[in-house]
Amino acid sequence: MKNNMKVWRAKNNLTQEELAKKLSVTRQTINAIEREKYDPSLELAFRLAFFFECTIEDIFTYEK
Amino acid sequence: MKNNMKVWRAKNNLTQEELAKKLSVTRQTINAIEREKYDPSLELAFRLAFFFECTIEDIFTYEK
DNA sequence: TCGCTATGTAAAACATACTTTACATAATGT
DNA sequence: ACATTATGTAAAGTATGTTTTACATAGCGA
Image 1 (tube, rainbow over the protein chains, first blue to last red):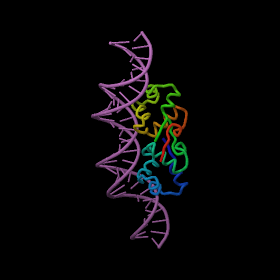
Image 2: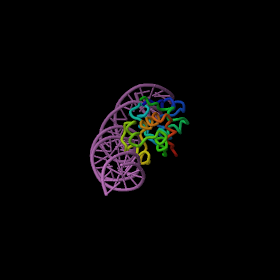
Image 3: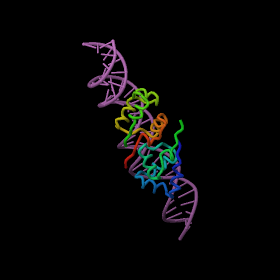
Image 4: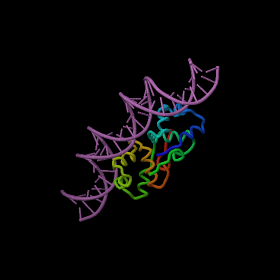
């Protein structure tokens, strides 16, 4: 799974911490996802897409 | 989180067990998701959407 | 140089997703 | 009545996602 969260975050001019706060998660969670240490839950993926006003598929791409 | 997996499965004329096999998960996992006992991982959500040839948002809807 | 901000990272604890095994029930066909 | 198929369900174990706390590093402005 790949993601371009960093790009979306940059587009919105937010630090990891600010984004984390807006999504009610910790900075470590945002950081780990951006660095692709793990994938978010489906719920958090939805919250991210809602916040960035895009689809989950706009942020995450799954390569089988 | 809501989902209409049952509808997509019906559309494809599959039992829970058949779908599970096609997705390489257990029947219990499919069953639990359909009954909304828990949400799938983002990865499994992607695999479901890929299999049904639709988007994640076509299957799952997140209500904040 | 000093202090501040943003990011990387790691360990422990906790929550959720998934598997395995197993049993129950309801519907169907013989 | 019996066997078969599809689904519901539950407990124990493993894997993954998330939080909390804490420390490290690099960049930047005073």
